[in-house]
Length: 356
Image 1 (cartoon, rainbow, N blue to C red):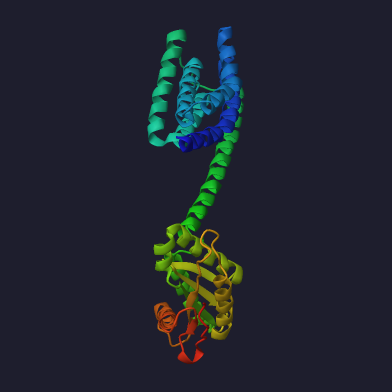
Image 2: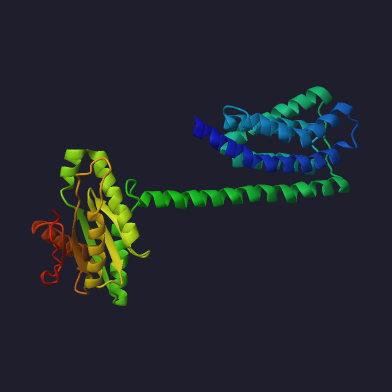
């Protein structure tokens, strides 16, 4: 409910300024059409109220409501009733009538689509009937020069105000879309790229390396005996270990290195412009930093990493082949004692003594 109220308040705020502009300058069009007609004083008071007081009352009604969105849609129907009333009261003077009713129809379509357009048209008809009950039907088939000029601000300024609101809304929607796109690419636990996003970037980097004959190395990282950590200390501790590894990755990688959570306790990194040896140095630093992690509630916990490396090679058919080489290296590191780094080429292994 709180979320719906927030959206409703945003809706009311978007309409507030266009209503001030539209009713304020619309009042000028109606005044020019009514001036030649014999009208009682209360009509002029109502016109001033509608043009300059009602926009602020409508805003207060919607923002103070428990359901601002619904309250604002009611306000739009009140606008339509008054629009129909003024159209009939000025005896359907062609230009002012078309101007006012068209602008209100634009408002209703923008705010609620076809459904609100139809409801708004019915509300306008209700306003027409109220006017006819008070003053009787009447029709004027021409507009004076003064009335034409009085409609010009409504025809120019109000669409500009609505256009600005639509533009700002489009900017906000674009920002939300970018934010949602970013969230869809991020692993919620670690804040790193998720599996799908990382693999997409791997394909891009693979083709870039092939086209530009550039260097790059993949690192696949596995937390040793992670299942035992979960089984022995619980998933909360296990999640803390994964968050620590992601934090260590961010601190030890360059800005253009691409780190992601590959799945479970397995992480992956693309290191552009890094040779196999350079990547091994980076991963060794990470391995040492991570091995010093201590959990405040489980001081006896010790963690370590097994890491597999594979440098890009032109002989690879596709990104999957490249990744498979890193995966083979990772399994060799795990199968030969863990807590070590292994490369895709057996002669380039980097063994490290096991932690006590």
